[in-house]
Length: 68
Image (cartoon, rainbow, N blue to C red):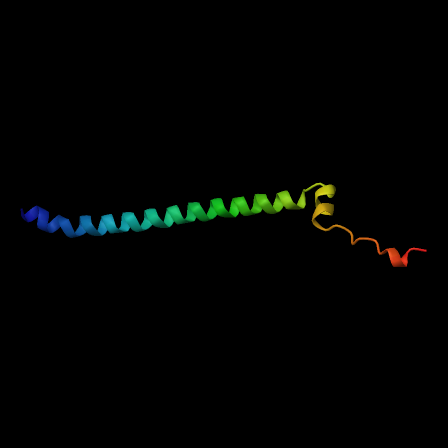
């Protein structure tokens, strides 16, 4: 029983450290995935064909009173 009392604090601190590092690495992985998705989306927007850009910003309608 003496061995348990001696080793238990080290084991508990080790487990806390392991859980903390695991959560840090998981958060980093999620952030990298989100960044990759955002970059892919931005890359997709810049490489969009010209006709889709025209649909987003159509030219203003012609005014009949200005036609000659």
